[in-house]
Length: 407
Image (cartoon, rainbow, N blue to C red; front, side, top):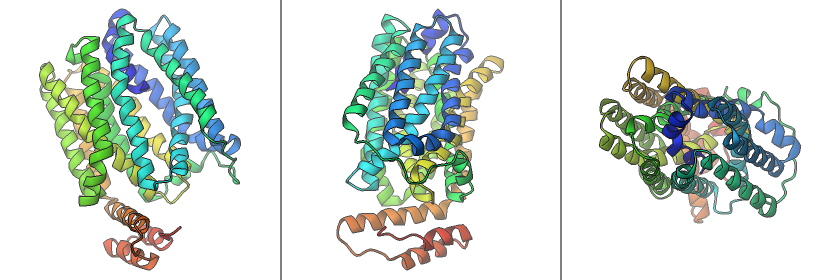
């Protein structure tokens, strides 16, 4: 909810604090860049204090820094406190996915769907709450995040079971070292390029829309509803029917087209509204399939994979809104969205280099589903043959031959 809570007040912040749009977009940049860098230490922290304590530490930081941002009187102060908020965000999100996957009883794919469902509901509800609080004061959404994270903190303390410390302590360099695995690197780079386009839209499109706080809240609520629906109901069906890679190719192409339309019709609020809402469907599909694929193609522990993936992708998300503001101010408002469309197209090209790895990941999911249904499973030799037939690259062969479906 914290992502969408602040979005409706971006133009109001610019006006009331006498800040340029590029300065306001630094709220995203400071938050996401710090989140990206901090992702590198999340495994190191959680392996020493345990997953639950890491979640608690992250939530405490968000409560404190969101409250301080609301109490600040300058755009510079808010930007600084958002950086501290980003540190808490990294500790929480990198650990929460691993905890959810570990606790779920409905299988790996089911855990990812639950995770994306929660994200979708939060993203949908956040703008509406942000609009109501932002109409009272621009400080309202920041204090609102602080209160909601305090509730999450109490819930975590009360309901999340205590988790033992891992037998092996993680290293700070593990996430960087994990990027030597081709599947994880390919997915991370593709996500960086996709996030550039996504956060260009999320962080900058409210400015040319020219809507009121409530109107912006309504637009992003409708967008978030589609994110939730397509994450949970549509993405798994598309994946089952066509496979992860083909769905992602088409999905990213459509998103690039949406960004190009936004770029061409930036002065037409009605077009922007339709494009933003429609993009929710594409973002919902992309989020579910990429999150699932990352966890499957990375031959490392899931917390390490999550940290490495988060580090790369949030760099793109953090830099994009600020770059969009600078491009709009120094060239024109159309350029940031054309650049966003180009980066999303580049993500397709990057994904193509990992096509065989995504095909092998789909096979893992089919095996898991068959096993859950009590059907005969492919053994590891057959999986190896499928993967190696797809490509002769040694990395795929090694990954396939060490994969045991029943583990």
